Image (cartoon, rainbow, N blue to C red; front, side):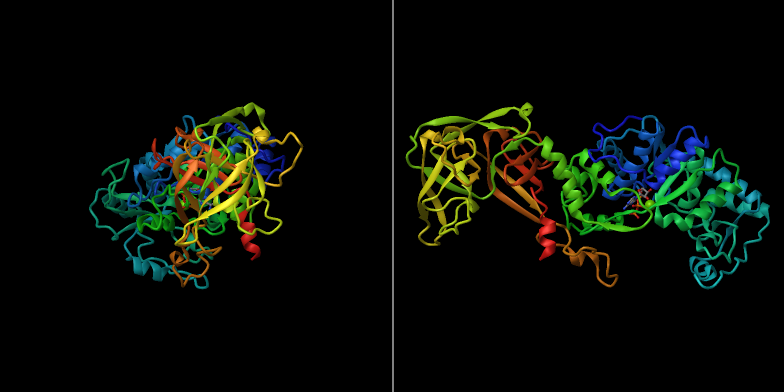
Amino acid sequence: MSTPDNSTETGEKPLDFIRQIVTEDLASGKHSTPVTRFPPEPNGFLHIGHAKSICLNFGIAAEFNGRCHLRFDDTNPSKEESAYVESIKKDVQWLGFDWGENLFYASDYFDLLYDYAIELIKKEKAYVCCLSADEMREYRGTLTEPGKESPHRNRPVEENLKLFAEMKDGRHPEGSHVLRAKIDMASPNLNMRDPILYRIMNVSHHRTGDKWCIYPMYDYTHCLSDATEKITHSLCTLEFEDHRPLYDWVLDTLETPAHPQQIEFARLNLSYTVMSKRKLMQLVDENHVHGWDDPRMLTISGLRRRGYTPASIRNFCTEIGIGKRDSWIDMGVLENAVRNDLNSKAPRVMGVLDPLKVVITNYPEDRVEEVEGKNHPQNPDMGTRKLPFSREIYIERSDFLENAPRKFFRLDIGREVRLRYAYFITCNAVVKDEATGEITELHCTYDPETYGGNAPDGRKVKGTIHWVSAAHAVECEVRLYDRLFCVENPDADKETDFKEHLNPDSLTSLTSCLVEPSLRDAAPGTCVQFERQGYFCVDSKDSKPGALVFNRTVGLRDSWAKRKKK
Ligand code: ATP
Ligand code: MG
């Protein structure tokens, strides 16, 4: 078990309730080494909610010198694929965690689980039931009424063994028989009303092929997998609280190598998104987004492509903490985490998203000078780079305003600004398209005495703007992302399909942006700060040499907070 490449940057916090339990269990000698597990079902890509569970499980293992298993909970072959297995492994590793030798699959335990089922039958704790699905529902009762016992509940052991073997041998059609635990049809907890342990499914499995046509249910599989791996603390989200009595019943009824403690914590809910894999899958399948790794998706692969760093996601998970009550986290908290991380790591560069041409009329036509730019204003170790400067440059269109108010510290006719690292320029004239009235060019003059951006006479300018040299700039596409949904909780209203809340403007593609030449060969995944604009990364899928594509990871300020006040 190795520790993440970067520790969290957030300060010391009191231990959360799960870490307290682990601490006590080690102090009392109940356990000498904590063993946790992260148990994804390989039926989709991991999302930011899973990151919370990954950071908790692998985090505890790292902090307490224990280990964390990665276990694929692959008991439902109809929805699972090995492609998901690979993406999940990649995402866990990318987040900075390592399961070492401890990679497991629930499907590896199918033989063992079958033997345990036989043991249950022999102990008269399980029986083969032939009620139809509808009948089963009817017999189950409700929250206020007890259920009714199945007429097959008291089948003799021998008959159960025979029928269960026939189920395994493919002698019965799907849906005709199930194996159920014999617990209590009157239990106030519906999970304890003779839950199904095995069902017939004529589906091949991505790992066991056609060996099985019966598959164990999640609740039965999970506790036995935990016990087999001698997990000490089995951490899951709150919706499993009602399943805990069943978890304990199975382990108390059977003789297993261990009896792990299930502990529930609150799942992560993030505003303006959906977190269920089924819903994320719909967005992908119905082409509302461009794949699981669309930078608008809060999947790990989407966040990675968007430019989030592993440390930023880990820091976010530390920041939100672990609690017992469900709560909502604002998207701004996640964005802050990546902004904080990139602030210290991302080199500064200049990029113009909406270019406006500027001709410096008193600058010689064929001259090209180099000015020096700092790669990070606070960190000299990140070095400097040379930026070509010439007579024609591009600035951001929004950095010029005709008849600007006094407090507009950028360009207008007669105003002077500093071009970052280069010269002071003053605007003298505006050229407009006669037909449309659109400004096509500015004519400015520069002060040759201000090389490097400082005036020897001590003269001050209020504004500093970014720019690129027209002849040297690299044209590129920049993709800006907005929240994927227009409402905080797209799932809130059960009457309305969550997709109706999709934000039609969640993606804006700007195709004629210009960046400084140092970025010409920037590798996919490179993260930079475009000065004054935000953090951007080179898209890992669509960016090609000669056709750069940048994703905006996040703006410089919390745009969410600003919008909320409206
Ligand atoms: P689905 O979205 O299909 O309901 P799931 O999110 O439960 O599935 P799993 O693959 O079963 O997906 O999840 C693996 C682990 O991640 C589980 O232990 C689960 O509790 C945890 N997990 C899933 N979603 C969240 C979340 N939003 N916050 C914290 N942990 C989560
Ligand atoms: Mg699940």
